[in-house]
Length: 248
Length: 221
Ligand code: HEM
Ligand code: FES
View (tube, rainbow over the protein chains, first blue to last red):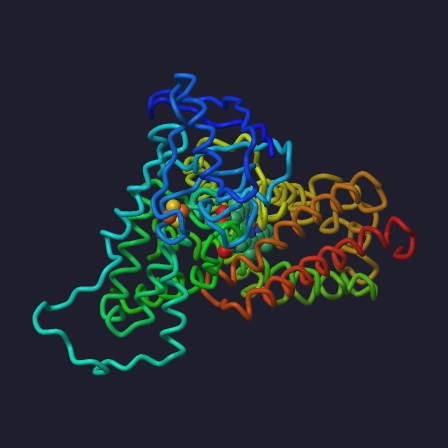
């Protein structure tokens, strides 16, 4: 199949950047979206041009490294699919694709389609952990966790931190990401101890990093490759209210 | 916590003030509906016999409005700054027209409110029918005639219908949003809250519009 691409090219964070047209020729429908870009890049290298810079690592949908906005939708048109797992058979011959980086003030573009998602690390550093005394490994089954709670914690823990939620949010808000981390830990006994401090610190850091506030549009849920639900944002709100009520 | 600056705190201010205003919207149309039974003057006269309720209510509403507008503006500015560059192609999957235009429907409601108060509370827009200076046969302020005479003008009725549509859109997003902000949602309740919010918003729009439309159509005179 042949495609027309409009790809965002930007030399550095200081360069204003622009969309550049490329033709992707003889693309196999079995290729992933990133493999399609690899083919385009090989063509560019042969012509002596700078290849398109984009992020990827595992290419099997588990690491959260990849992510571009395809025709206005982070990770492209397929639900619950990372860009690396999106195959070209979901596009039609002669399609025109606009490929842009994740956009938000907190995610500055480094080059082309690569953005700096370090702001997520700062949110995690502010409270996305539990404190434990090191020493001997605790005995198995000393801390029993009801299946129901474990399931919810695991659902939240599915977040791979790719940043698609921020990219999709009209407010550039990191609420779904933060909510997934807060909920994941608050569901488990090890995480409950610091839950109040955590939710306050992480939401505070979210603002400090330049993310917007949540307006409950739920665009994040629609694009999340792991299907993280906005019920976790409600849970974050509950955790926050609880923390304020108990004065922590 | 009284003047929150956190992401969730500001939203809770929006939710609590929005819900107070929405409750007033419900109370207001319930009271106004006495017009259909030609009992508006009696209702208003009875209401004003409760000065503590009236003035207490006005104070609460004023505070709710001030905080709602203040935090709504702060949130909008912050959110706008957090997304400086738009995409060349924008596609919304779940965000509604109502939700994305919350600030604009809010501004419309705010501007309308100023006009509405000048018209029916301060009664300065049409002194010829001002109820406070034109009592009815029983010596009560003739609110009924003031309202009916006003809405007979198609322009005024039109302004009301358009402004009520803006309020309806505002609530279409606002009701469900406020419950999510309070954290009162899970996977099962979210769709129910959304649907209930939509039904309530549309019902309020139709209910409010019924008054100017009934007057224009000559059913209420
Ligand atoms: C009687 C009039 C009004 C009612 C009943 C009302 C009700 C509501 C409700 C229930 C919400 C949802 C709160 C939440 O998201 O948690 C809301 C949000 C909002 N309102 Fe109003 N409102 C009114 C007037 C206004 C006015 C005059 C403005 C003008 C600035 C305004 C601006 C906003 C904005 C910007 C939001 C969304 C905040 C966000 O980004 O999340 N509203 N309103
Ligand atoms: S490259 Fe790892 S999730 Fe896509």
